[in-house]
Each structure stands twice: as structure tokens, then as C-alpha cells.
Amino acid sequence: MPEQPPSRLERRKAHTRAALVRAAQALIATGRTNAPVLEITQAADVGMGSFYNHFATKEELFRAALEAALEAHGALLDELTADLADPAQVFAQSFRLTGRLHRRRPELSKVVLHFGFELTTSDHGLAPRARRDIEDAAREGRFTVRDPELAMVTVAGAALGLARLLHHHPERDDAEATDQVTEDLLRMFGVSSAEAHDISTRPLPDLDAAIRAHSAA
Image 1 (cartoon, rainbow, N blue to C red):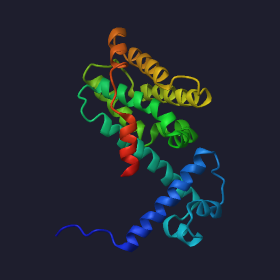
Image 2: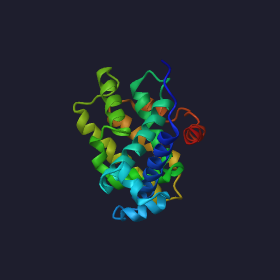
Image 3: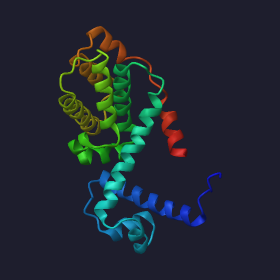
């Protein structure tokens, strides 16, 4: 049997949940995680009762908001690296695109920054994808990495430090800074200087078009 389209009630519930998640993401981005439930529901333009139809606690909502942000980010990276076979290039392209997203999607960026190193062990977003790419590159001899977990700590520190730098110094060129950090990481993982520079300066997919497509979806 063909799958039935969602009912009007199901669509309304999904819309309400999405509005609550967006409101929570906006609060996280500004560091206002202590906001009362009433303020969250007002920002989402839904009733108090609607909140508890979807979430038992405010903490549960914030966790859902974080996971939604990370999955949106991860889905975009998956799409924009799907045609690459070399895991070293997949890693580099994901890192380069992530660096460029800080200016293009500042709210998502600030949600990630708010949770910081806690995200290095997350099952959502950039962390599991970066671990996969590091392990694949090491297995194929593209990276010289003895301990992928320690490599992830280094990558996370570089990613979060870069994000803070770009937010605090808007005069910096985000693409240039991101590509330099990517090149440095590749060299640290055993890629030759010449190849690291080449991989870190290759043309990238149209990020703005991808963001518009995801926003419209």
C-alpha cells in the first residue's frame, strides 16, 4: 500500500514542534538557556499546553534543538561531499564548508559553539562524520593517525577555535582562514605540504545555493 500523506493534525503537530525547536535554537545561540518555558512558547507563538504535548522538560527541548541543528549541518555536508571518493578530500571539504557556514548560518554556528567540546562525542552532525573520514583516511593510508580519538580532539579544538575567531573578528576572510587551518590539519595528519595545499584550495560546491535549497525544503 502507498504511504498515506500526513493528516492535518499530524502536520499541525509537526509545525508546532518545529516552531519550538527553532525558538530554542535562537535562545541557545544567544546563550539564554535559562529562559522559562513561557518565554520559549511566546517566541514560538504557541500555547503553553502545546509545549508539554511535545517535550517533558525544557532540557529535552534544548537537546532536540541541538540535535536538529547538528543533523541539518550533517545532511548538508553529506550532500556536498557525496561525489568524492578520497576520504582525505571528504574530510578537508567538510571542514572547509563548515568554516564557511559560520558566517552564512550564524545561529546554527552559535548553537554549536554553546555546547563546545561536548559535541566531540555526539552521534549527530560533524563529529561522527569527521571520525568516519579520519578512520577511512587512516585505513587507506591517506592519513598517518595512530589514535583517531586524539585526532578528533585536535580537529574539534581547531574547528571551535576557528569559529570563535571568525565571530569575534568579522574583518577576517572566513574562506582564507578556514582553508589555512584545513591545510595545517592535513599536514599534521601526514599529507605532504604540496598536496595539503592543493586539496585545501580546490573549488568547492556552491554553498549558498545548497543552503537556499535546504531552507526551502
